[in-house]
Image (cartoon, rainbow, N blue to C red):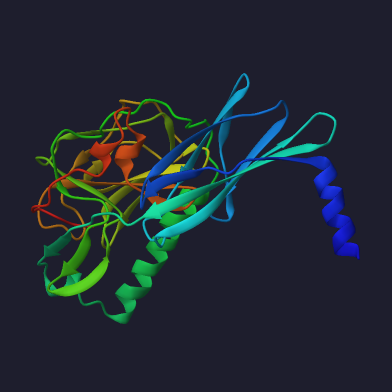
Length: 288
């Protein structure tokens, strides 16, 4: 009986809008718009809330599809709490499709593939530090400032590539590798703040920038980092130089991005995002 009463109460307080189906690929940032009544907006998908902005009667939300999200249908729910306390809801469906990810093979020295206990502990601690930096609140609102490529060069390893290190299957590549000469300037693609600067076993000299709204970007295998933790960064500012520190078979920048913990293809941050975010060739050198 209590459940029936609760259901009736919800129906009297809620307007439900018809569901629609959206499509997205693993690693994509999906932009969703809806015509909404006045009030406080929230959007939920994949068991987390996503940032929104209102444009008069229209609202736009950005949702990150993690690289490892299994293909299938997932709900996205808009909710508006009106000034009188009643609320409006709209449910849509996100159909996630598998990305077309190539294989990527690299050969490295044995100590960069077979790790003893001490190195494994170090790698785990460094991964935790990177995730903590990406999870830390950063000032600003990323929705969605025009970005610039951090370095000019050939994309040598695509996002999502299925990696093999010395012939052994490894984790999927959660960024893109951009081949460029050592010393090439690396630029910040968006305004942000330096959340982490560290020299790590696998990723070498590494920077993490926070951009607000749960977005962070990662820069690895640098020859040098030229900004300090806590520094405010503007788009286009030099933050380091291309190198081949850590596990790397040649000079390149590894550029990664996480959005509310979802691993996304960083090209989706750029103004021309779309088919370009999935289109790249695979060749060497490779790294992270």
